[in-house]
Amino acid sequence: MKKKKSSQPSDEPVKADGRKRKPRVLKKDIRWERLDNTAHLFPVIAGESMSNVYRISVTLTEQVDPGLLQEALDIVLPKFDGFNLRLRQGVFWYYFEENGKPAPRVRMENMFPCRFIRQNQNRSYLFRVTYYKYRINLEVFHVLTDGMGGISFLKELTYQYLRLAHPQLAAQVGDALSADTSLNREDSFLKNYKKSHARGYQSKKAYLIKGERLRPGEFGVMHGYMKVSELKEVCRRYGVSINEYLVGVFVWSVYTECMHGMASEKPVRVAVPVNLRPYFNSITTKNFFVMVSAEFHPTKDVYTFEEVLKTVQGSLRSQIDREHLEELFSYNVSNEKLWIARAVPLFLKNMAMRYIYTTSALANTTTITNIGNITVAEEYRPYVEMFHAFLAMSKGQHLKGTICSYGDTLVFSFSYDLVDPSVQRGFFRKVASDGISVELESNGVNYE
Image (cartoon, rainbow, N blue to C red):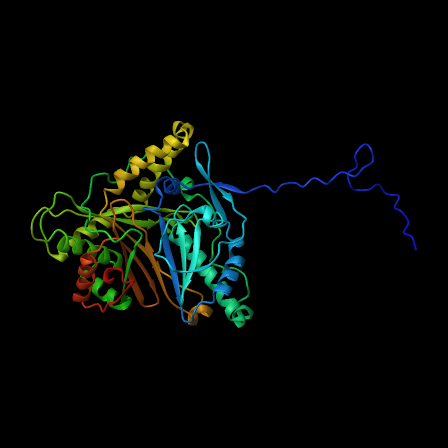
């Protein structure tokens, strides 16, 4: 039976000669966004020798299934606009553009960590996911986000992986992102800055730790595990916070192991990143931190640990308040908003930023960042053993420290490219002498 032709006009486009036109395919608008104030620097200075990549990893109680980890990444990535990005270079600024390609391939770790991320070899993404036995590693180019944003993504990736590996979990908790996971992409620097503040960053040169370097491409990692309860007891005895104590122990180690307890023309100065979110009621997943400096300048030959610690404590506490933190980032944002700065072509901005970075980088002996206490939802705790984090090297800083804790265990992680581990040994020796039990683990580059 033949169908009756419709008397209604066809919806298909028709040319003047009666032939059907091919329907137009409308291109989807590609999402783009500006870099936050801190992020502008990272594309300028990043390269093979200074990757600006940090790592956060989670150790599970069972070996990682790479197929399920890839599936978990494929599911989670489209939910995070802040990771589904690639970096573009404009005439005046770098900017982000929605990536939209398939997720980068999950690979077994077989190289040293925190290597430079080449977009053209990583499906244009600015992060990588690797695994090794029980551990899932997330490495992030700092232009995307700071440690808080990295932790949020890694936790959701881990949750999704565990739901795939244990279907009863999915039935129990569902398949949505956690209620406390933020997807906010606000530029909190711009929102909170105040005009006309003076520069707050140090530019005078600091004492730098030097020595024979590891072979090109090698990267040293040393973890020291401590009980939070023991640390708290020692800190109560000294009248300091855990962060102040650990930064103070590092400064003491440099003073005794490198300066040999003698006076110096240059101070030991430790850059300490401060998460600004609690101070400004922010939940952004972009970078939102500033650096303060803990400084100790030995002008005489003999100092006690208590004297060093008191100096470090006073240095940090004098800087960590809302007003001063606001001054630190407002100076940078005010410069970014100047019309003359906006009008300068990117290549000239890059030259200026490289010079400013070099000056400020040599003003610090090292960087010690405290990720804080990492928690996971109760349903996932039986499967999660520990978290770790550490930083890549930067100009003049060949030894860095990162602090994070999970449960009652705190891990202080050194990352370095120096052959001599005397500062690390001095650090853990001092901690142990204060009555804190320390268990050490390293990737063994000093023992090859």
